[in-house]
Image 1 (cartoon, rainbow, N blue to C red):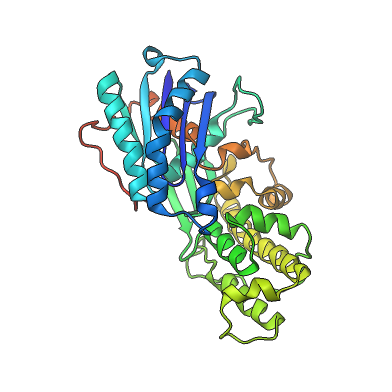
Image 2 (cartoon, rainbow, N blue to C red):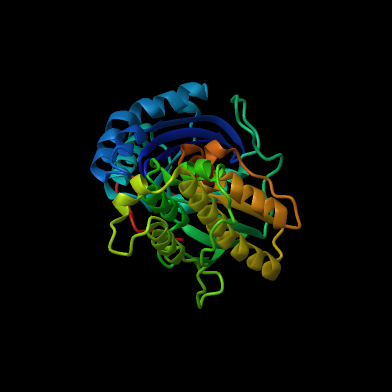
Length: 353
């Protein structure tokens, strides 16, 4: 079975072909990040316009790279939520139209759930990919961390899962973006803060970890505010100093130490919760998913603390991509889950697990 996956939930226009939920045949991503960098974040209208320009060339390239024509494609899978409304609309309308014209089953994909399924890809003829040797086993504990999501989910089987906990305010990726702004580092914040952290002392400053009523819930607003107050104090100012003035006043070493200290605490926060869940549920496998899953510090801390080895997928499959969508589409088809109505599928920007 070959499934074409289409992803357009944010600023990446992506398409991929996956065979049997295991083999990656193509993975094409066109990012409009260069447009958004100058604004310090994704501008929804600009992202939607970029999707309109890129989506058909990206799909056509994905088919070429997979050496497929439409006769070879058994189904189409598309992200219908969560994400930016305008961006989702471009992908869903394209997928609906193709499903009708090409007479293919259409599967509606939850973007957050799809991130987990990137870990099920175990082989590819494509160069430059390092994939796990085997697919994860159930029960499966998934830590999903990205710019929009921070969640711990226990999967008992395909499509049988429980949301254990999630962020009550900022997602971890969003928090990294805000710290990057305070330090005058470029967007996206995760890679920028991670790079700067290499120059700093991760124990230079003591930052708080949130304590919440929910055992597995997360919060990053406290450490984020603590960084702001710390930076203001370091430059000899009080809380009335606007954060936009800080980059010019902080020294490069202060920026590096703040970046390293925040990264340590933010990653420790999600790893602490993951370890709690691991000890309670004793899963057969643990996976990390989402853009922050490519963080070397997250991978280092988890590998250091988990009593079982963890197989990480390629960092290129952690950020938004069509491969994860196609993979989940394969499993939906294989398990005979109902296909979506190509004449009526609507977007769900606030979709949750």
